[in-house]
Length: 413
Image 1 (tube, rainbow, N blue to C red):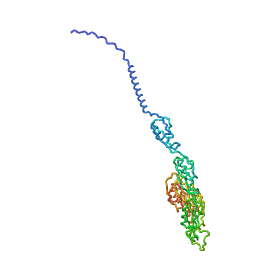
Image 2: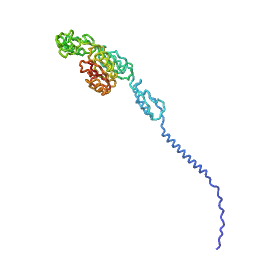
Image 3: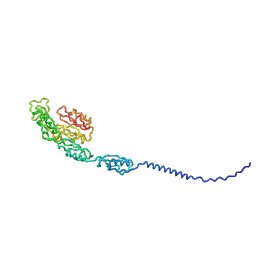
Image 4: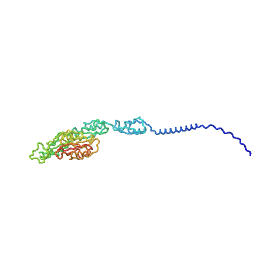
């Protein structure tokens, strides 16, 4: 076999230079930069969406409350209302905080001060007639509340007012006025029967009080009276009538006393005071606390009684008394005191009955019930009452404000 000779092929090509990598690296760098830029732009847009917008506070002063609230809500703000007295018309906005023009975040709270009723000054009406005073108060937009009290002043005259003149109050407030009931003439009832005399005294607007006395005059007839006929006293004052019980009736004998040869039967009663009954001027205690008023009246020889009434004056202040201060009355007679419940009356509590107890026992019981106690002495003829409570004011069982003063009168023989 002949072998065929294969000629050698062409030589292999020469290897070229190694490939260059930097264009790929550049491309990769560009892609990474573009991705980072896209992420930054996305986050920036999202942060912009979440940021709270800033708004300008609108001017709503001098607008009505409803319009001001609507305007703030339109601006994306939250109104907060505060009502205060002002010189603006009621219902108008007279201030806002933050002030108009301020830049705040949307949803912020804006406080609106809305005008309440207008403030007015209470005029001075003391000394005026009640009708004139009432008209003047109404002209200021105020309401008058009148209370008639006994007085030596002419009827219908304003004796006092609360709040006092010059006080700044809201329009529509109530002003309490104390009006004089005036003075009346005491009728002459000496020589009349007890029933006729009592009716005449009551018709004059006075209170008849009778005492049975020994007298040679016909039994049942009035032999003396105090105050005297024709005198002027406050309406509602008491008139003491001495009624004859015959020569042997108990009571104060008229001067001169009828002769009595036989000694009085034992035990002898304490000697009665000679007629007419001793009188004294009733102190004017209006405006004092009821405790101080009781001290003053007791010192003048009178027996005070206390009741609480509605009034705008301070708690426990005496707003009226009967008989009126300055009048003449029998020593030992009762003087009625009207004490104020105060402008904001609280809970009432019954006064414990402490009659017959010792002063120490009575004070302890009153304090345990939440009251303050005041002790005053009162002369007694019965020695069994010596050192014992013979009276308390306000009286036991009466409901009075908690924490007020109860005065006990302890017998001194």
